[in-house]
Amino acid sequence: MTTRIPVTIEGNLTGDPERGASESGNEYARFTVAVNDRRLNETTNRWEDAGTVFHRVVVFNQQSNHVASSLRKGDSVIVAGDLRFGTYVDKESGQTRETRDIVADNVGASLKFSDINVERSPKANGPAADVSATGPVAEPVSYTGAGVAR
Image (tube, rainbow, N blue to C red; front, side, top):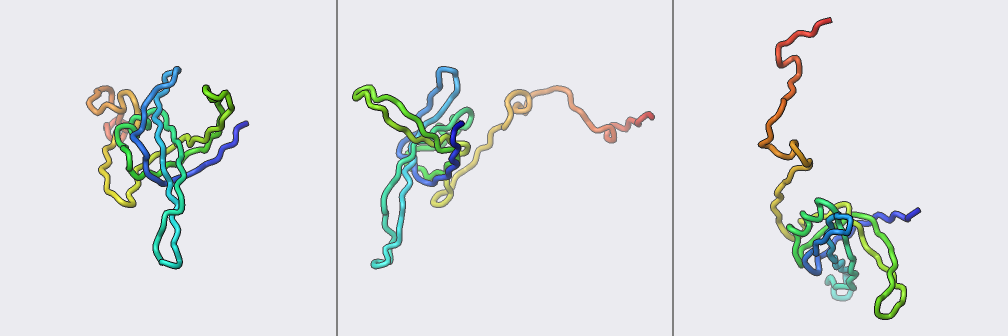
């Protein structure tokens, strides 16, 4: 059984998202989000940076294409997903290392400091996504004028 730790972070991309595909063909995009901790200095009454935490994020399937084509280094984002832990063996030292990634369910551009234009894409694949597709159209019986026989 795996532990599911839901997280939501807000921060800035440290680089452009990297696209790829797994051996099984699943598309993904990876990127890193820098989250700055800011605190009010009560002596100067000014906000100051109090440290930065870097989070590695991976997103899959259609959303990975949207992320890779829409977001760039420095963009402010909000990421919601699950925190996942893993291990690997370092090839150089042979030591076991730990990893911490956020597997994103949802990635969005933050509107806190910028405007964006949303370009919608179809939610479905196949004929429902193709507005030029033709085919049978069903209408309610009340629209056709046909009676109901009992």
